[in-house]
Length: 150
Image: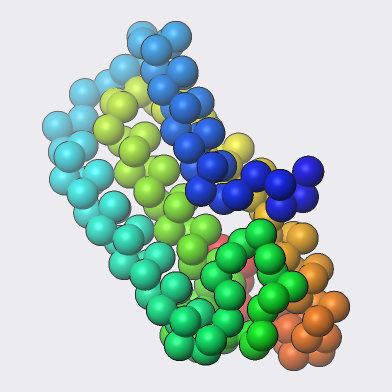
């Protein structure tokens, strides 16, 4: 199961789960008059974070393909990667929070912890294992100094 479902599809699955929660449990609804502002701000933050992360990978001429972590040519530990080891996944998480705010339903937030758990178990940990084997001590030092999410 490791690295079989691309992260972008994991986001879509979480969004489908949100939709189902809202559809089948409408009585958990709440009014949130600033939902579009929150959605817009979080979406902008998410996009900026993702583009910053992708730019860092491109600048260091390494792969951004989550299905092929073994093709990584260098440890990127500068820029946004000095603060988060997984800013692209963090961007996806922030976007899911933005989407859940639009639903105005408490249960729309439930797929978010599931997304965090699933992407950590089946994407991040396998990537870390591959990178640890490839870059040995350098990557271990990076693991000790930079947090997985934030």
